[in-house]
Image 1 (cartoon, rainbow, N blue to C red):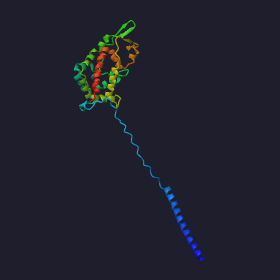
Image 2 (image 1 turned 180 degrees about the vertical axis):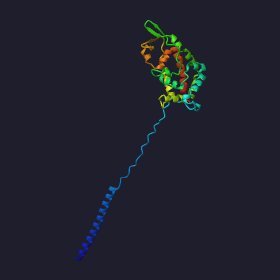
Image 3 (image 1 turned 90 degrees about the vertical axis):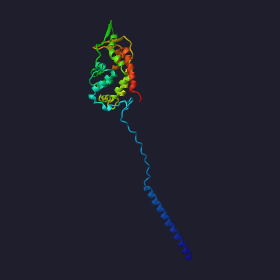
Image 4 (image 1 turned 90 degrees about the horizontal axis):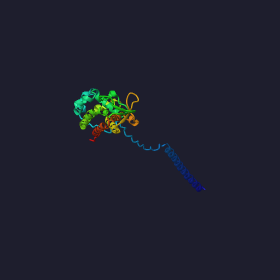
Length: 270
């Protein structure tokens, strides 16, 4: 009987020890579960987004006048004081007599820039023209109800065209390139900050070269004070193209040839 009590007591101790072990295991498991819930999730690595490329604020220049071409620009006068320098520079290429005969001597660069900018438009302001008015009035011929532009009208432009035909285009381009900072400033002052005048000049030359060659006789109408082209297509063209048409086919061809030469000089790759 006593042996049974001893055996029973031993079993109770074993059971008690097992219970303690199980309780400890349960408590540890509960603590681990709680701790895992409180532990912050591992941070997901953040990959920094690539910064966008900087946006250039510089104007896109198609036909630059390089620093080499503009050599000597540091010695240029202020734009408002540049007339004498520009006058003498042009006289060295065109001849002093030609410059005196045709060029308006005040605000030369500003008037050149404004006129170039306006040639592709419908009108060019007369007071801004850099060239003196062509002598005489428009010469027309009327037969019955038909009025045409007289061949004699083309002769009014012949002296100017002869000067242009005799011009050394390479020398003229060098003068333009040396004086270019003045042209650029005048263009920006005209209301085009950040725009490039030489690009505009090339654009205008290209537009002038597209002027149609109209064979005489060129019919006119006079709805008010001034004559207009009877052909609506001709009358709807830009001021520059209509001027070339008014000069006559031969004069227009001569001017276009010089424009092509000059264009080649100011877009030449260095």
